Image (cartoon, rainbow, N blue to C red; front, side, top):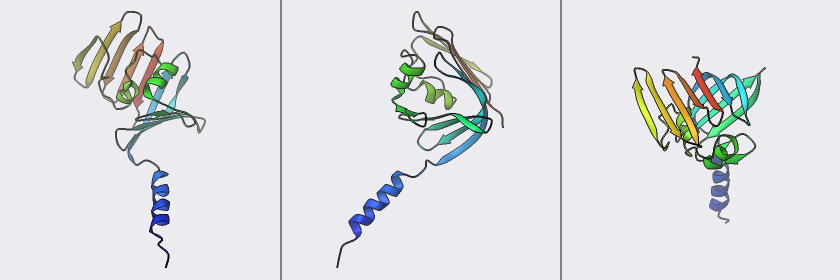
Length: 162
């Protein structure tokens, strides 16, 4: 009699490894991302996934124009990069690796050097300025966030529409 436990275990591991991430919350958003290498401003969805991960999907004419999955790595559908690699390629190498995850999670950006935080009734304003590296104003006000770095010409605006 053959032992089928090992092949069955291998198939089970393969199926679990290919499973789609669990979506805990999905919200309609209007998003703008403008950098020297990315320019998109449309409606879409921001999904909160399991394990502090997020997926931002932006649509134009019913077609996905941008899909970013942000967690331990940042994936754009065809390419996955470390957060530092993504920052260097699309944003600024001076940014902390958790920048995009903190913005999508509506949190204060941890690791920004020389940062001041001002509490507001429905959020906060975070300012950080390092000469020659970045000049950031990040504001969370209720259901919207606005990240602007005038030095690196980066703008990220996410407004929850639902």
